[in-house]
Length: 234
Image (cartoon, rainbow, N blue to C red; front, side):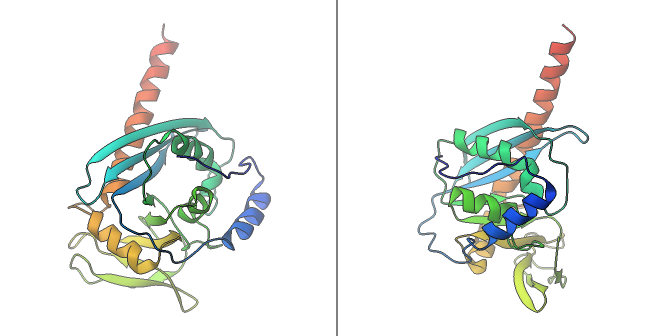
């Protein structure tokens, strides 16, 4: 994929927050996603206490959800893990992974927040703006706001509210299993985002794009760790 815009990621936390507030003004909460034939999931993995981030993107055909491409990239980042500033830690590796992607997905799912974020710019919104693609945040927990527990049935939803405003949706993707928390990343509306999450959730809590990305990210991290260990013992 061509990435026409990026920015420095080696910022101080204060500089990162100021940049988030600038980029937030560019997030679009609606858009015509057109006919979807290809979706992608993005995730990152790292060993706790280390600064090497392994980022992956997995592209899948839609609606059958067959994996058509997997790419990965690694980057060293000194940016610490700070809730709300995840993109500044994972962003350099993610940008490089997307540059390696030959596919052109119409919608990209991220393991994290969209606008359901303290400054309205979670990783799905941040990367969506940089990629200029429709993006959806699919998180496993809430970062801001509150949501009632959805009904137990698959497809049940409950709004994520913050100061009376709906900023996302708790979505039950599997009966009697914890919901995921869906929020708009960029260039898609919440209803479309929820529909796509449910359409791509095939028997697991996570929708298939982020599930496949999560599995691949862990696979890449383990493989890189074994390679490093093997090299160090020669």
